[in-house]
Image (cartoon, rainbow, N blue to C red; front, side):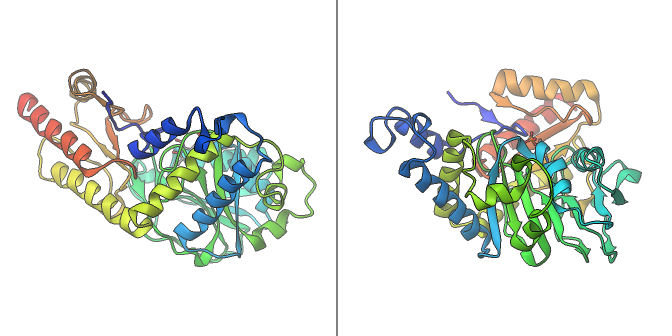
Length: 358
Ligand SMILES: Cc1ncc(COP(=O)(O)O)c(C=O)c1O
């Protein structure tokens, strides 16, 4: 029997997609081979690659002024590459600090010799909110992490900035439509909301690519190499991209990102209402900045928190409810593939645990 998986990532995949993959594992479309066993230059693979790229654009409603690139190394490799590719001579690169994932991106940029600076932070209140800022400086770009996986905060509107936004969307990728009017790059590892580990998907505005066209750097580090070669410059992680393509098809069949967003709102509201109406559970996240993807909460007691996630796993088949090691507490990750009924089963367990332990 499958468990109820609330892991922050890699995380649960839609059961429909897993079953399709299972069906095709030995013989892809009755061709007598699996997709893992054939060339990335074959027509079979090229069709998957091209469909995935077209679906990314269709789901976000963007046109040919953006390129879609698939790259190995996860989101973490992009921290330095983004800075190396998109820093403009003499213009600083601005980072809005919401803890772990932005500070890693900032550190990697500085290690790459880039002039990076922190222009806003929510450190003063333990990263429990999203800084609200208006940035009018002429910087290279403004970098944010759209959904803060560790603390459970999420941008509801994009910050106003004069320079183009570079957005890490690793933990809320393809969960809702976004206003692309000032997005230079939207990217993320896909293993939380859109597939399995193995690569990052980057949606890059073409004028941003001009910035690194003539920069001297290894070919594999330059996004132009990958954009110009349709992400087929070298052998890509074909199986991971095949699953990603299936998730794109699944999202479209569900009705697209507006429908998915409504479902995500409904699931998160159910859990936040339960927490708000209880005197046993609490969340420290600012009301307006609560993540729809990662619901962070606590009983306020370390022993009870530990008992909660241990009993959830042992007696109820619920996995991944332990909070991030930096923060402690509890965290329920309810990405696109989590259905409301699964979230309600968690809710019933929360009520039962409260009755037994308050
Ligand atoms: C918001 C965010 N950014 C970046 C990363 C790092 O992703 P990767 O492991 O693909 O490098 C994570 C991983 O949890 C994340 O949550």
